[in-house]
Image (cartoon, rainbow, N blue to C red):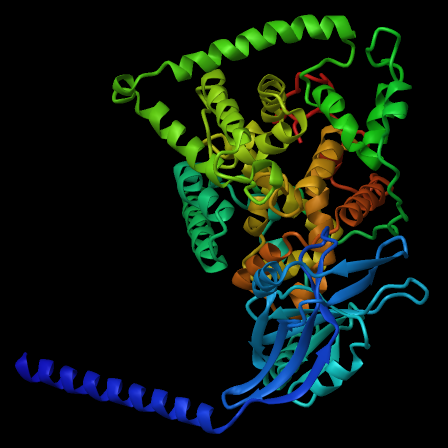
Amino acid sequence: MLPYLAYRYVKNKREKNQRDMDSDLDSMVRSIVPDKAVISIPGVAAKLGEDSKEYIPGVLSILEKSVGVFIEWRPSEDPDATWVMTSDDGNAEMVHSRSPEEKRDRGARVAFSMDVNDLSSFRNDEPKRGSGGFPSIRLICRDGSSQVPLFFRNSSTGEFIDRLQGYITLRRSHRDADLVIVVDQKSEALAKSVSMLDENGDILSRFMQNPYMTAMTGFSKITSFVQDQVIPSVLNDTDAVTQEEKIRLMRELRLAEEQMRVHSDAAGEFEVVTQLDLPPRPEIYRELPVSRELWNSFKLSNGSIDPMKLHHLKMNVFRGGLNAELRKEAWKCLLGYRQWHESDSEFEKRRTELAKQYHNMKSQWMSVTEDQEKRFSKFVKRKSLVEKDVARTDRTVPFFQGEDNVNLIHLHNVLMTYVMYNFDLGYVQGMSDFASPLLFVMKDEVDTFWCFVGLMEMTHKNFEKDQAFIKLQMNQLRDLVMIINPKLANYLESEKSDDMYFCFRWVLVWFKREFSFLDTCKLWEVLWSGQPCPRFLLLICVAILDSQTNIIIDNHFGLTEILKHINDLSMHLKVDEILTAAEAIFHQLSASQNKLPAHICQYLNIGESAVSSSNNSPSRSDPDREDL
């Protein structure tokens, strides 16, 4: 044993010495060989988020370093820099830099330096003639992550791309003219060889051997794992690798259960779907938000909504959302806190009674002593979860900023009172994401609480321990992708990503982490309208995935890269474009209802199969509405 230990010691010592020598040599080379700027383009601004009006002026460079060639973007060092951008309506906006300290902090958040060998592709968006916009580039890395969009104020993107081609081979995507792919010559040659061997392969053969409806049958067995590990991992901004590890464990648990019950599933119960010929998607336009004047036109003299005009009103909310000043009144109706048929006096009378109920439940948890908590473990655990979540929910939103912000106390009170209202469900991480916009709009604990109760009646199944509803939605999402975009569905299957777990966060908290706070408000009120179908949330998922198909496939993304790419879409999605695309997909499918499988028609509430699913429960606001 001793000679072996001595051998290991000497071997490890030599390896350490070699690493130290390599490090010293690398440092020496860096000191001798200076960085060389191949190109530096001023007037290239980084946009912080899709809904942001702020652009940070900076310089985009390609640098030759001793360790490789790098693409870098740094904020401008000129403290007086201003920048002009053209807004969506074509008007020029002066974008002034903030104080030097603020500018340095904001610029540091988005500055980057990346090796060109880590570049997988980039989007090169050129504005239409006469639109007044500026060309932009968004770099996409091999690991699926993306840099912030860069806008070229004083030049085109052509010079940057030309210089870049001196180091890597580029080609435009055959599917998307705005997507430029970095070509790996060895991989390209291998792919061509493989494709020649499989030219006559049936792309649907794998699918026919593995019916899509058999997926995720084991989801109900991983309840505590999902609540204790997966949900915190997805919601707490952990890295994609950690999230992927949780997802792979979920898949292993599911596959293990499928192996146990493989003989109990009747193959005849599943409807085999082949690729359908769908008509073109119609051109859809969003409308203006519902104003107070328009809202009031649907009212009767006693303040209730005319039942003959209710559907028309909901369609107006679906097509345009609501003006911000109307939300406090309209959300109460959309969430069932106020019934559509209630007069003003009837609602005020009932609100007084509901306020008493709220304060009674609030006093219950506030009166629990420390001594009682020693024998009330479930209460203590839920209280701790609420406190942790409140401390980190929407803290970048001004309404919730600051350590002594009274709104955080109100949010805490609402969530703790819900624990007493629904102790069977209690509190699960993610519920605070649903409560914070309600408090922001209502500015009142009582109104916020009862709106939250209505919203949880729509979404509580996302948080139940058996996770059956999440399982159902993931199944349905994959069914819809298979119909709408079979190319993407087959690719996801080939990458063992067709369980759609990378969409978990989207479905769990209704895109709260993907859009800005105000865009989330618009998205939610559209969904609360219940139009045009019970599963419009899933069509939004499909619309986003459909828009990312070429990036995912052309970059050969696997599960890790897909997950990183999906996460990086956060705050870079345009809510109106997504809603328009989702509605167009609905009309495309509705026009094909005679060809669609019965279960797809049920999801969309179209055709002869438009019946209420037994998995859905009506909300208090509308007996005809299904859970979304």
